[in-house]
Length: 458
Image (tube, rainbow, N blue to C red):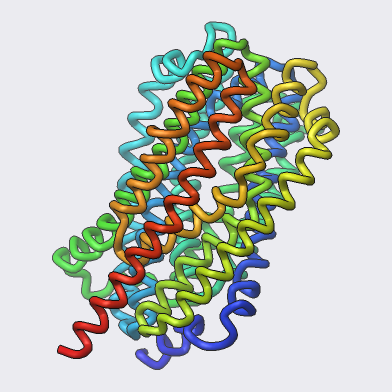
């Protein structure tokens, strides 16, 4: 059994750059697919009208909160599983995987109940009007019931990536994208034998697509990788697994939640400019995810790479991977700024023809992408800190970015320079926090190496 795990620790050998490229390419297409997943919803819902598009935009921060919790647990599990693989401990790999999935399921139950009971007051607080609130209710009442199919696969796919396999999670995600692309128009517009459900159809399509990822991820982990096991279950070991995962996962989830919470506050500020501005911001936010998709793909595989090499004490590979990844983030960010600036108008008009919606999208795409490179560095440094078991420092960076830079700069920018000032505030927040993250990671990586060296000598 140990031999199987040693074989799985395949990220500790081979050229660093080539390994990262081979891991990132499948995840890039998966990330593009998942961005397309959201953009397909946005595209078809936008055909229903501006109110429906605004309603979907209001749900975005809340959906991101749930995704952030799932991602926190998943990344916490991935960080400890990848270290266990690097150390060659198969039993611990099984326990961490099984117990991480169980923990995700239990958390889902709690949030489904809370979510269903708070739809009206929550979205009213975010600035939804009486006209838009019923549309939000239709969407979220379905989405909440399907939450288990969103959360559990996110944890499962992170566990698969911890083994060094980025192709399988990518394939799983792409299947979900295809199903969503097919079902969206059928359920939204009532094509053929399907009922016309409008915005509720978008939610149902998402749930059906995510059910696929739920089923396949569990099959891969349980049948192919043999990483799920309920044999010789000991409650003490389960608690130990939960502690290990939550030690990293809770700060990650908390930090990730700050992002949609901040977006919720920004959405509330933009709501003062009217539903059309909110609709434009919602589209632009999704386009930002698209622009950073390849960096997010790199970040998603970077954790397992760092984890396995730290477990094997191959620090030279860790340093080189960080250097290469940061350089790539800067180059990609510059490229996206050029592309999105030039193509902002034709991109904006794909989603909606309303002049105010289009102008909001264009304004965002001409300002915020200038900071994409440093926002990419922020992602890479944050992932690295979590694998170094510095989750509080990683969370602190996001807190600094969101609450000490992003919100205040956006608020005062909006107050003195309208939407243009708000978007410049976002860009400045990305730039400053990216620079800070670079120095924070440098400090704690050096500290980690010194501690390992001291322990080895003693």
